[in-house]
Amino acid sequence: MKIIFKLILIVVSILYCGITYGQNEFVTLTSSDLIKGLDNKDYLRKKLIENGFTIIGKTGIGITKTGFYESWQFKSMLYVDIIYSPGKENTIKVGIHETLTGLPERLIQSFPHKKIEKIDEHLPTINVTPINKEISYSLAYSRDSDNVRVVIWYDYPYYFFEYKDEK
Image (cartoon, rainbow, N blue to C red; front, side, top):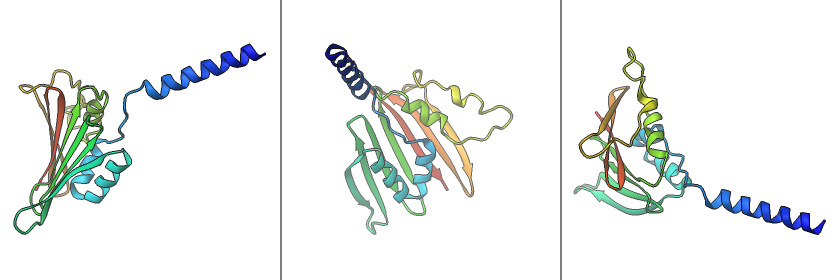
């Protein structure tokens, strides 16, 4: 009975260590979150804090300091730069290290799009591996009075997603 108990204890501890330490980091951000964050900086800050990001830089922009810039980091694998300029373009730039698998595809798949004569049917199947400096993607989404655009490119070792609201 002692042998069976010890064997079960060893198996459970091996499984526990393998499950908790063997997986990639998981960040729950989606393109919808980032797009919502273009207009609502408090919402985006809350999502970043929930995902374990830390702020690494913050500054005001311009003489009147009406806009601001923030830089957030997640374990040196994921960076989010936020530039707010009231009345102008707001920009969110996301840098994802290539070892953080799954997130670039999820950001593409979660980008809101409307199907117009099968134009956007290929979005869920976009693979980020062919993206590089010369080959990039640009996706656009119309909402209310402005357009949201994301430009996606790869520059070793990061995938970059730049979200802009074009007013």
